[in-house]
Length: 129
Image (tube, rainbow, N blue to C red; front, side):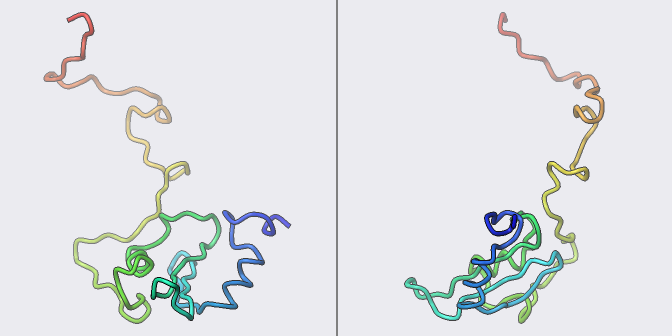
């Protein structure tokens, strides 16, 4: 029942009907997101590309190679022409803000709010000076 009226926790039944009717599945990424492309070109002359998220609709879960394909940076999808990885590149990670895995440096409120003293070259602004 919940999926009938919400889009942020997955595609609705009406959305699935429309997707199956007019588009093809191009591929799936390691997060379970599915990527589609319309069979026919739009008025602008290119086929519409879109993603159906696995679970919560979180755009930061789209890896770089799929992001490039979605935004027409690459003509071929990563399933046909994988993006060449450089030695210095790290694996893609989604935005963890708001989760238990979020970055909490020393001095943050979640870590007790105690921060170290400011460096010696720092002088606080004084409105009376």
